[in-house]
Image (tube, rainbow, N blue to C red; front, side):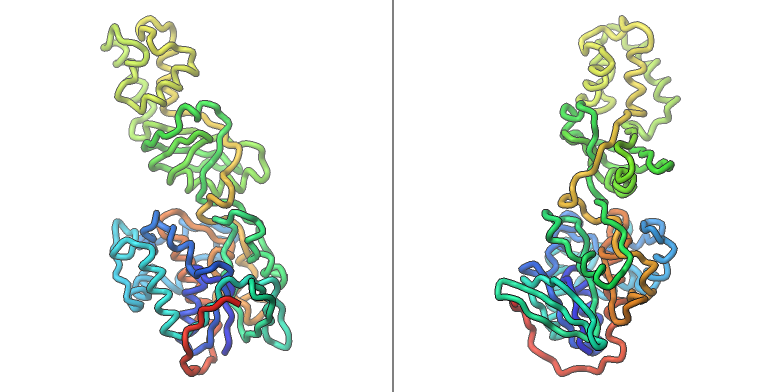
Length: 421
């Protein structure tokens, strides 16, 4: 059984190992100069392999009901066992799974070594331009600096990834290849990405990091996320923003702007904070407006609140009439921002969208094209930060690789083949 895998990322390598273990003759076609390049950047270079706190609610799709039956076939525990068998030691921190050495390069190394031991062919610098099915086999048209050529496979696995991290749209062709087989595709939008905001005050807030809750109103839903927020000159970033970004990106395709709010004091109720401000004003006579907020949040934040409220920082707090100072302080519980867009695909960790799950089986085989399998980011599934997207990649790769290799007979071992074509 000859199996061609287009894409040498996480899911493509997992599929190749799984298929080779079942006797298939496997070749990976990778457009970059090396395989697994994106793995090196995962988990801030530590590679968050998976997460033992598994919930299907941590994944998103236009057809979420299909996700449980797929992920149940290869669990986080199966992922750890898979890597242990490859020789990788792992460690776990509050459910988050990492290589023991906390180096993403170690994960890539054990995968590369596993491919070599199994005689999997790896052809780098190879761009697939077209695929078609003839006489029950898959004909792949590809090119490299050495020219154009063709290859024939009995089965084919598309593991081409998404537009996430790509600097040029022309680099992405996974959706185009899927379209050649009439698979329904949902347009990619950036996910796990920064959000851009309209307010000019962010230039003054750039560089601030703090624990906060971010609330986003999109598509008649209200989404909330808590964690370390990062304020930038163009808007907001950090884990809570990344978790919300796929909802924002989807909604922004239809709306010009979205409304969001930042709670800089999520540990304190609104009523308790208002009472605290009133007590503070009574007890701290003779202080300035700037001193009134000292020690509450980052001084850049209070500086912006005072400026937008028209209050001079040096003004005596007791002399500020009405509720102007208190109202400025209450904005720490609900600081409104207008989301105008996301950062581009090049800065996104993953994408929302992809090949619709309605067109594939639980074994990741295209329903209308037997012998064709889809894995990883090319499918319309994206997960939260925390190892969930890599778990999806390992799981779908293993499932597709095993299914594609069904019926194979063990082939004679061959030397590892890493060449440009």
